[in-house]
Amino acid sequence: MSSPAITTVIAMMESLPETLQEQVAEHLREYIADLEDERKWDKSFKKTQQQLIDAARRAKKEIAEGKAKPLDYDRL
Image 1 (cartoon, rainbow, N blue to C red):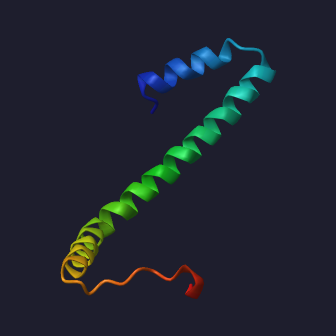
Image 2 (cartoon, rainbow, N blue to C red):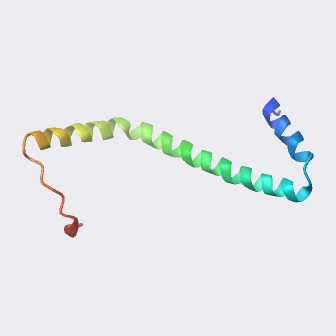
Image 3 (spheres, rainbow, N blue to C red):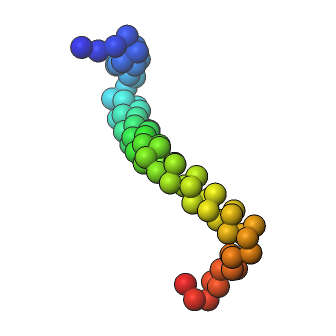
């Protein structure tokens, strides 16, 4: 079952010459892959958001207490 939006896109693509249909299809594949990648990052971020907030609070507290030391990039 297709949504009205998909039906509209298909009708638009069918009106194009085959070479342009291939170009549009390739752009859509890339765009959809980017959207899926972004969705994965959003899901991953939501899972770890509280951990990131907690880590930032700990770092801020350590800085305020004078316990934090500058990062030595040469030792990484």
